[in-house]
Amino acid sequence: MHRHGYKGRKFNRETDQRRALLKGLADSLVKYESIETTLPKAKEVVPYVEKLITKAKKGDLHNRRQVISSLQTVASAHKLVDEIAPKLTGRNSGHVRIEKTRTRRGDNAQLARVSFVDDLKEAPVAKAAKKTVVKPAAKPATPEETK
View 1 (cartoon, rainbow, N blue to C red):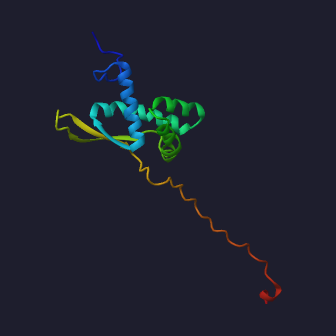
View 2 (cartoon, rainbow, N blue to C red):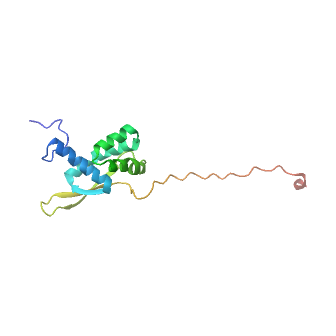
View 3 (cartoon, rainbow, N blue to C red):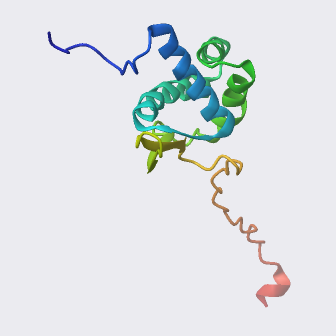
C-alpha cells in the first residue's frame, strides 16, 4: 500500500478527536499569542492558523463565521478578527513561526514554541508620509523695491 494522497498527521486519534485537538491548539495560540507543544503538532497547527488569519483579515461576515466555527470559543474568534488580524495586514503570509525549544523530560519528545512573527503588543504604525514643503508664492515686485 502506498501513501500517495494522504495529507496530514493522524496523531493516533480519530477524526473528531484530531479536529478538536487542532481547534484547541489554534484557540490557545490566539488567546495566549504563543504556545509550546510537540513539534509534529506545531507543524500541523501552523497551516491551520495561517488559513484562519487570511480569513480574519478579510473580516466580512461570512469569513468571521468561518473563523468562529474553526475555533473553540467565540471570544477568541472575535479577538483574532478584531485585534490580531488588523496588526498583521503588512504581511501576505508567514504570520506564525515555529521555534524548537527543548525535549520533554518524561518521553524525550521534541517541543516547539509556536508564536506570531510580528509583535502584537504594539499598535500598527502607518508609514510616515513625505512632508512636502510648500513655498509661498513669489510676490510681484513693488515699484519701491525696483528703485
